[in-house]
Length: 241
Image 1 (tube, one colour):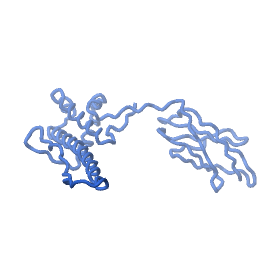
Image 2 (cartoon, one colour):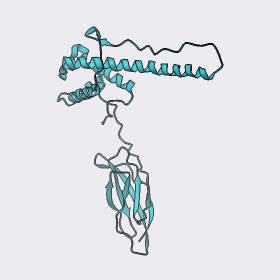
Image 3 (cartoon, helix red, strand yellow):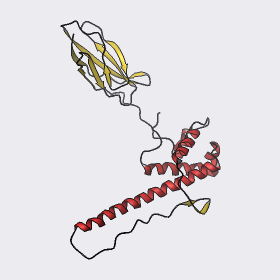
Image 4 (cartoon, one colour):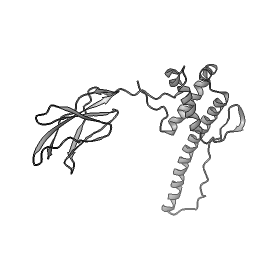
């Protein structure tokens, strides 16, 4: 089953990925680090980067609270008269993180740490002996993506261009796209194309000049290179030549 991208959008959740990867690479005497040839230097960088990222999360929380407090203090100037108050001081940030291997050494920020981390993850996941179960432990496997519902019915709409040609609209969603079927008066239903975009321009030959036909359109999604789900409700458009 397909999985989502492992790296979450929220910075707080990214912190959890770093923690899981660091802890489980080192668990059981570093069994997974050995299995995936993660070097001591890479383990050290991961541990240090994790701690610095976590420090930023804690510090940003303090800074946000301080900013709210500053705004509240400033707004006292709009309130009732009173005795002078001392100006507020800056926020007190959490203690700076130190190197786990050298507790007296304060860590610094490594620019590009995320690039290092994603490259390390890619190397692990490309290893010939990689197991998804290991990736789940390390926090580098996203959640499983449930397959689409086979009862899905595409929602099809359409309109006539100023040129007279129809244009269809159908949301693609998680599918590869949708196949378009057309039925014209006196002509059997036929496939007229496959669209990977939301909109589909119909380029069939127009009715004879001065005449009109009702064209009936249907679409069906495609998933993993095969038709999927139900046909849409028929859409009738009045096409003039």
